[in-house]
Image 1 (cartoon, rainbow, N blue to C red):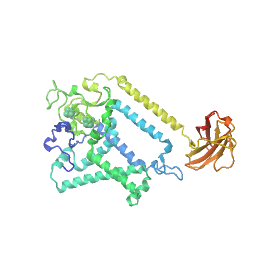
Image 2: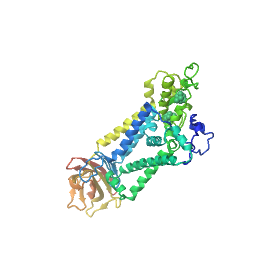
Image 3: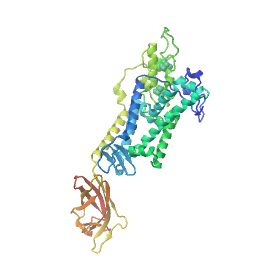
Image 4: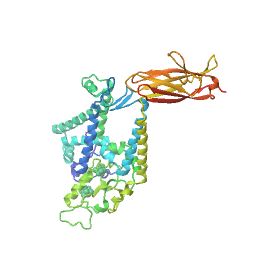
Length: 495
Ligand code: SF4
Ligand code: SF4
């Protein structure tokens, strides 16, 4: 095979053995057995198309959204401006000092995933994971060009001909176009999209831009076009540890063996007495994007896409049996005839409550921190060497580097008050005169910048509480009224 995978032979196509059945032994390294998923329609397939359209639509369109932030600011709605050390999300501007918001969002994402997994199993994997979404898109393109399952299997078995080469070239070309668009869109989140696109197509973009577009093009093409289910089965760590979030009340895609067994072929008019509803048609195996047989029980390879539910429901409709032989169900429901669902027990499980509580707590912390954001921040760094200086009049002097972070787009004036030591005096390097502690020092900061000042605070020795005396810095923005505070210390000799 051109891609080094082993296709099913046409003779075995109808039998549709699952991937596990095709592996007669379990070597340390097993070559990939190519999966040929069959086209299927149905409720879950429609849902998957809807999620796919939403995810891809957002991904490709968002970098092109504009947002007016006034002069001297980028007008891209969502932008991670690495050279400018700034993140933009519509009206929100995140400074490097606020990277904890990003950490908070990542924690929220992880907790949401835990909660959804404990309630609904692998919903993320089956519907919204980028690997699933792009693989689905690539499979759709493949089906358009090479046909459905049997046609693709037959094509792979045929000797090379002009027609076969034409189809393969067309498919890989289409994949590459999508991959370039995907890699390009990713880079657009870091640079101005229209400018970078113009530069890209006129050969004027930076080497880094071409490199990263190439890198993400290659990863998209390889992961969604070639590796596919291998990523979920062998590369992704999530299937390994998500089992820790599952219990017997977690909803997963399950085969109701109590109803399906004993399975067997069924002809129209045959009795259903003494047998199960599964007619062993293997449609569920043929549509599976990972090539497994859901009737073998819970398997790590199952991404929870629910396409086997659509396939089996179609079969049940045809043979006149109730739908739901394969369904979203709990492990308890799958192993025994339907007991009445106790929703309170299903939803209010300890692990669900713990994840929900953690989610609420972290959301509250992130929202509170966000609501308390100001347009000004200060940082104070006390000199370490020398720790203090004894002046000729006997007073003690400490040096500080005082930074004002002006997050606005205009120059602002600030009033600095330092309290904590009576009789002390402040000297701002470069400014005239000395300001007694308790009086206000006027400072400035340029728009969207950090202003750095050197401050000396001199204090009469008797006023010091000891070796270390608390010193409070309090800054007020004279234009907006925003405030920022910092508590430092003033060090002196031992008593
Ligand atoms: S699609 Fe349904 S009836 Fe057919 S083999 Fe699968 S479980 Fe059995
Ligand atoms: S077994 Fe069913 S739910 Fe699981 S991956 Fe295959 S088709 Fe999707």
